[in-house]
Length: 386
Image (cartoon, rainbow, N blue to C red; front, side, top):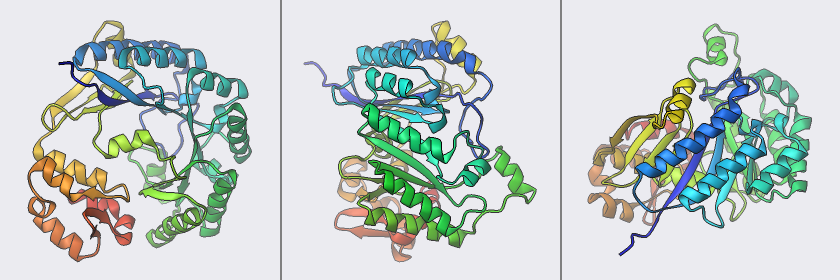
């Protein structure tokens, strides 16, 4: 009897940028744009090697091009990657195919090419509609270019679009943040992501914070900004479905929900991560982050997988909680018991007592959720399960 195919999502890391933003801690390079075409060929080679190593039927339901700045890639190599993915992984006819894009790198010609390739979702890294804020972040686009990129994408036919915004920026006030939210709502994208600025180790912002030259809003003001986003976007018809994400009905990010639900995903590219939920409680691995090593390995017919390991019962339970609790739907407690053979309270008696009693978590029907207060300090809640 033939095994039914397992659904899988595909992630492609494009680590090239025009310029590294001052806050960016992602694995990316701003000094090697000439490698883009060779790197795209390496992604195709890695897909072929990976497919041979996984002797199970698969059906790809989403694809996501992240970075870095994926919109630096021309449509021709993108088409080759999508075509190869379809041939190797049986890309579903209604697959969600997302490209992250920097507004300053888009043209009508490029957008048209992306649509012709099959891309049907665009995620615009706007971050702010305030030029002074964009300059402080080290972004390479202006607010005017963000508006132009969004409207151009609509003309080309992108009917599923997201906008990313960041709050708690240096010198940002609550009225400035409200202006960004209202500007995004006025464009009427299907999806809006709002992130609080985090200071990543090794970034220019980290150095500025250490020497006292980075003036940021305080924790209380940041919390007010988070709550204001929930109110403004909620009143504008956006469902708050994950800590940082809001969507119109029917437009939640299908790809990201795979991560939060411990679904299968394969990551391709330097530094990309993968997870398959079988055998046992799953296996995780990632590629070498070294660009030269990654491309050499692919060229010589080797996978660059590092640290492949089986997920333990304890790790799987923790992942189910700190990933599932990111979504406002929460975690199904009955499904948790069925999967792991123990109740939430039985597996985490201390945490359940402290967090339920302290009002950080709440049980609604048969689901465990973060409370309104828990959402504000979610990272502290999650750390307690690790």
